[in-house]
Each structure stands twice: as structure tokens, then as C-alpha cells.
Image 1 (cartoon, rainbow, N blue to C red):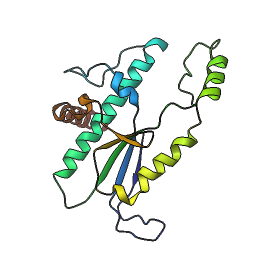
Image 2: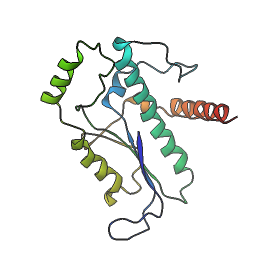
Image 3: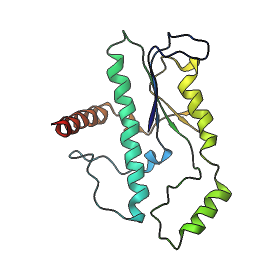
Amino acid sequence: GCIAFPAGASDASGDTGRPPRFVFVSSEAHRSAPNVPAEKPFAVGAYGMRESMRWYGYSKLLLTTFTEEVTRRHSLDSEQPLTVLAMCPGAMSTSIARDAPRVLQPLIRLVFRLFFPGPERSADTLADLACSRALDRSSGRYYHLGDEKEKDPRAQDPELAGRLWDEAERAVAAAVR
């Protein structure tokens, strides 16, 4: 997911001089993802519950790498400032295990409720990243539970990031034909 603070939008003080900002909601799971293949990086085969976390991490690796390419491409045009950030909200009580066997779902929901906070906890971090003036023009950063952290080295690979961008452009062009 991503939220955007559009160019020219005013903040609480009415200031409209803020640069646009994108905050992509990623995950620490991007670190445990399989490597991105040279061909067809967006192809995900059939999978069940066992593989769902693997592919979740893979999708977050692609997303986190994408933020790197958006940052790079935008820095080529410094006329219009842009801030691109990524964050991991941390483990929380959500419906991420919705595909678990029905017999296990009540237990999973109980464990989530007992041991993990709701998504409201991460809303504050997301709002801070989306609105903090201190982060204006500080693209490329990644935050885990509100603290800045390095991305997985694969997500910082400019060759991979460029390849994913090109593949996404081809996919979008094919979809709009």
C-alpha cells in the first residue's frame, strides 16, 4: 500500500509549499523473500497457506525495491522535490491469516488479539512519516516501527530496481491496450 501527500496540499498551518510525499507500507518480511528471478519477476505460481508468507515477503521485496527506483528516477529531475519513504508497521492483529484452515482460525485470531496490537499503533508512525516536515526531501529511507533502518541489500540494487520498473511499465502498457 501507499499513501501520498499531494503537491500543493496544505498542512494544518495552511502552508501549500510542501513537496509531494509517498509512503509505501512494506514489511520486514522483504528480508526473507526469495531472490527475484531474471525473467518474469511478477509471476507468482499457485500456492497454499505454506507458501503465502514466502510470497508475501516477495511482494514486499518488490515494493521496497520499487521505492528505490522511484527515488532514483525522481532525483534525475530535481526541479520538483519529492519524498519517497517505506515503512514496516510491525506485526499486528490483522486478517493476514485469513487463508488458514477454518479449524485453526479461532485460535489464530485469539493469539493475534492477545499478543499483537491492532493497526492503530502503526497509524501514528504512518502519519508521522506522511506529514513530518523533518522528512521533506529525504527520499529513499526505510523505517521499521518508526526507527530508520537499512533496507535489505537486494532492495537497494539499482539494476534490479530498474529492471522491475521496466517490467512494470510493460505490464501497465499491456493492460491499457
